[in-house]
Length: 498
Ligand code: NAP
Ligand code: MG
Image (cartoon, helix red, strand yellow):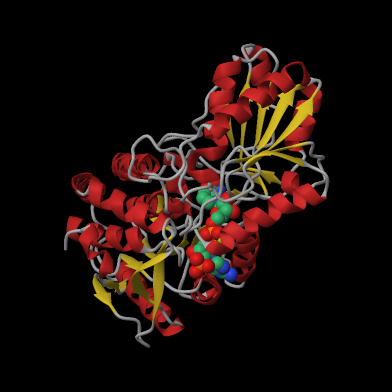
């Protein structure tokens, strides 16, 4: 079935064993366009019985199906085919993503392209899956083989719905695993589209299943389900801790891509204009709803006043709204609840003595009266102990702090329980690499606002999680290593001399 945004009004079913099926209790829940507040469709609400069914078919597909045992070239062809169908349906996928998330069309397009490239990356990487043979004592022969880790529960967030699905589904398929994908309840539409595309490309029944419903209920149930071998999760740090605790009951493999509060260090010798433009992108891209958002801006004291003045001036010029205009910069907030969270953080900063230099409100204008909109916001006069400096806000809000020395910048940057990303702006390359080597984060940027491209490892230090995605080494997180030691003598050894 073609993915067509004209189907937006249709009711979406669960995707189990290669077909759309209603949940066993037939319940649904509404999906909203956050840019307008309108309900755009309804999706099936899975029960725990539906989860049991999805896990059962995924296990059957793993153990009795062909997927894991097909030659690598065949799985590779199917992954390339998935990417090529996604390319054909690019504009439909982009439309679905914009309607369901309130993103600008340019952000959505970039993310759909990245999802496509991810499938292409792993289609090629399949051929790198290989065992080894090690040196062993005379008479012995050894080899190791890689096998799929098994049935994988993949639980993803709402901020990059299709891209996060691709980051997880592509390497798991490449490794020969079977999958139960649980998208965020706010943004499930492109996950369904991806399931249909995978099916059309030749992924056998039961290999990829999509279930929708409450994370606290069915997500949590998946994390503890004895039929699941691995949980791959992207979302909030607190949810990740809960999932890890549940998964520990059956010692599932776990990978966690969690929250961030990433520092963005601007030294006095930086190219000022470039650093300002890049820092603005670093926080306001995707309306600040990015795990890698550089939401703590650290600026050296010699340029602090000049930097802040120009940063605020340019922030005020960002184009917000008109999502379908390629030139728009900032979209809507994902939900009313998230809008309230962001606003309460800004208000808490004011109460604690900080100063809001711009934003902190709904933009003026009729088009912002509906939906959930928040002006790009800049907060200064903050101290390290304030909530807005320590906690992830996950919205278009940046805090700016001043530092004097390189050592102070490093100390402030590392003063966080998160460790996802960090950026450094300086024209002194020796300093750039001296500083990056001391920053406790998994994804570093130097004079550059882009955090990653397909093929580069993405993931966190500290409470931003563990495991890496987007890179060929992620394949290993979906594989087990089996070591086989055999004896080649004419008669088996008799170590007990019996
Ligand atoms: P979230 O609230 O943790 O939810 C993420 C997913 O987990 C959703 O599918 C959710 O389902 C489900 N879930 C909720 N509670 C659960 C539970 N107790 N057990 C199992 N699953 C549960 O995260 P979010 O608000 O969607 O996303 C924002 C967060 O994601 C931010 O912290 C951001 O930094 C992080 N993120 C990290 C990365 C990275 O690569 N490090 C990338 C993107 C986003 P429901 O939607 O039904 O609640
Ligand atoms: Mg959440």
